[in-house]
Length: 114
Length: 109
Image (tube, rainbow over all chains, first blue to last red):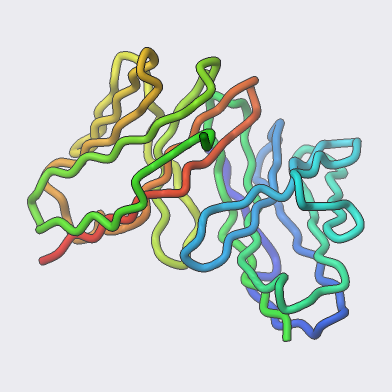
């Protein structure tokens, strides 16, 4: 298993600003992912963070809005750019060694945009 | 058809009851399967992997039926603390994790 931390745990931001969320894993992992989840709703995958190359985005998510970095095998950041109230959500980072090992999630970042 | 489907519930059961959830998946090439639980306002946590031979962990039993493309989770002797949303996860192509929408369970005193 992996232990994952996220910073910040929560934030309240103004419309039009950007927020960068950090995700740190306590061991090297092959895969890292970013999800969004509205309260009471399903997880929505934003992108797979690829080490040393551009992230792979899911339909409906673009790099200009959600730039992602992954400089090494234990760390990734997600930026929510030019925020609007519709971006208010919980953002979750996860990591996996292999497809057979399952994913482990960070505690999430609760974002409110006013 | 969605890739992974679950009955959203909620399942309201009394303490001590046995409850079962099913999850169906559409990709016959899927390789790995998991159950997660998610408590309100918390992150999903891995509950158990699911194997073709079935596996048991205390009061929890998971089964995989590849022919019919479904996985199941059985909880025996339900506790109040079992109240949560249960997510099934199907993995294909080695790294494509697909989460089901979850089934809500409320165990009532």
